[in-house]
Every structure is written in structure tokens, then in C-alpha cells.
Amino acid sequence: MSATLIPVAARIAAALNTANGTGQHEAAMRLLKVTEEAGEATAAYIGMTGQNPRKGISHTTADVADELCDVIIAAAVALHSFTATPAVDLTTKLDAVALRLTANATQHDL
Image (cartoon, rainbow, N blue to C red):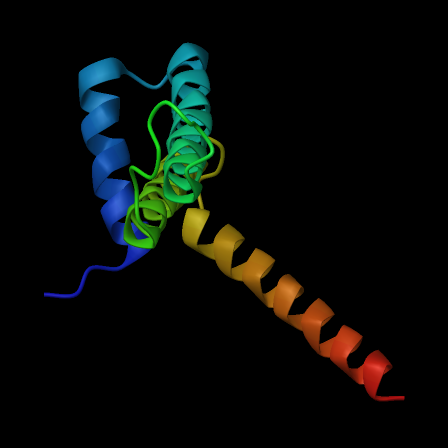
């Protein structure tokens, strides 16, 4: 089975809507969840590099990657609280970024 981001995020958002409602507070909590997950990714990176002498090396690159996936999922879930068309908005953003990359590559080729 191969899941795709937006449909799974929609299912998570729907479950959260049922459990917690859809008010402004809930939207804020979903946005804060993105920050929480980003903090966990940062902690995994610190553990991977051994920057905390007390803990030493406690994480791997796979741990960092796993936490980054959680950030992406949390952001996709939060996106559902701020738009009725998350798939369209994400695609539009990705297209704009891809266009900028193409434009920048063309400029560098001059």
C-alpha cells in the first residue's frame, strides 16, 4: 500500500475535527504541532551530531529523516485548517517553487 500525503492528512484532519472541533483554538493547536515536530527533528539532529556531551550520539540520520516526515505530515494536517483546497494550494506552491528553480537555473546558465 502506498499512501499519499494530502488524502492521509485529510483523514487525520477529519478525525481531529471530530475529536476536537474546528475552531480557532484547534487551528492554532495544529499549527503549534508543526513547531513541536520541528523541535523533535532538531533534537534528533543534535543527538545525531552528539552536540549534547551528556548524551553523546543518540540518534541517526534515519531518526532525523523520520522526524522530518512528521513535520511534513503535521504541516499538511494544519493546512486543512487554513484552506478548503489544500491539494490545490500545495500544488500551486510547488509549481511556483519549481518555476523559480527553473528561472534561477536559466539565469545561472547565462
